Length: 123
Image: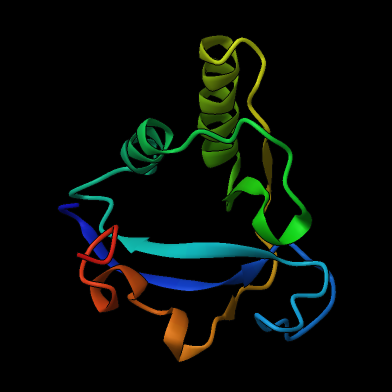
């Protein structure tokens, strides 16, 4: 996406420190997205995410669907998006919206997974 500077795979949403893939503790796998707000907005990113994402079941903490926000504006955008997704899915949307907590970078083998696999299906 134009305006996205980089993405970092990691873990957030938990209280326990230093989660890893093997010891996820109470955190959730997540992606930190750094972007240029002069080119793309948080709302644009969330809109694209909502088109690609269908959280129709409540997953365990590691794989749950969540949007982590940094301020009240992002919170409102996230809540409005989730509300619209719930209407569209007839209430079958299970996405949490919560303030961001400490972010821990995932192991190197998780970074750029899409590129390493040669595309979405590994082709």
